[in-house]
Length: 305
Image (cartoon, rainbow, N blue to C red; front, top):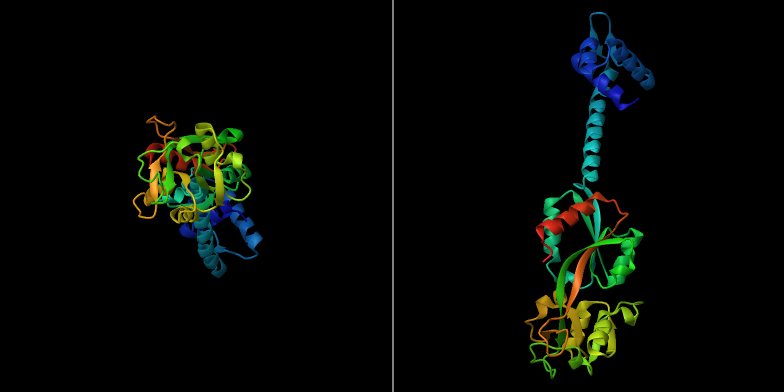
């Protein structure tokens, strides 16, 4: 039994005429008769009572007609879903994002994308920078919203620049530098740093260490390494150290009483603010069509921020 036989059967059952059904299906009457006979043999039951002047469904034929219509409808729907998935209109996508980015307007990006493509299911993965690159390479993540300092190490990845985020020094209110409008790395040389450094991440991959060394000429005194932004900010507010974070991670804390957020300058005495590039990345060999839909949305609509 195959779908064509079901189509032929339904056509005969609806017209109760082999000649009309054959014309409707663009086959000969002989071929129609042979296909119906093969279907009945496969089922093991007669579906029609027929003679030269009369065609009628048997009880088995009436039951089978209802089921055949359901099967054909489901098959047609399956084809539509498959085509939609191939075009990226339905399906699924796993989206990774760096820890702290949930404090940004990332939720608006997700909401707008979901409204545009409601049949694409979304799975979210929150991780640190290098872990996200690894998940992309392993195929466990389709796209990642991430900082871009180390993307050159991953030759299999494509990436699209989104925005340069300012870097901010985060201090407790009683800190001697809390009244400053801007800060340079050299001015933080004697400070105790609390950094975002998930387990297993070496110091030479920490943005804070790289920037302090390149801009200020020193390796920062790290007193604590935290995995969550909220814990880091709580420690800063308690006076246990200072932090340097991208603007998106502290956007909603700039006007709080227990934290002071100050823009960082690239060089002491200059006006150019320090920034970190932010991007969306994906594995070149990942052919999930939903990726292109998300990328089009991000590029065209510019809804990331």
